[in-house]
Length: 165
Image (cartoon, rainbow, N blue to C red; front, side, top):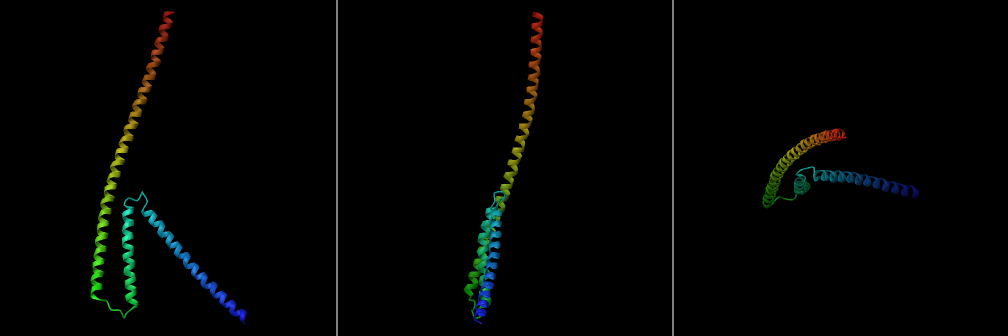
């Protein structure tokens, strides 16, 4: 009978450990996915990515605090909400709105300026490449003409040597 109780306790502990390990694995996958998304946002190819990352850093804690506050007052019905709490909540909400709006406008301005600058630089580079290729064609033409002129001069020189002999 004692062995059966020990077996039951051990199997229960193993089931609980398996359950806990499965949840840690799930959390690890979620955190890994979150880190990959943050890395994609902040890549150099993603123009304005750092501003988006800063927006996420500011907005995510505000959302988490809102959810925690909502859950707290939902669970604890006995707590009354004071008017000052509502006022502070509205002020923090407006501050969050202002911060998000400010960073959103700055991000759009910087992104559009960078896209414009990149477009202008690409046009300059394309123009430069076209001029270089045209110059190479002209130089190749001069090289061919110079080669043919040298051949002509050598032929004339050989003819003159033959006539002088």
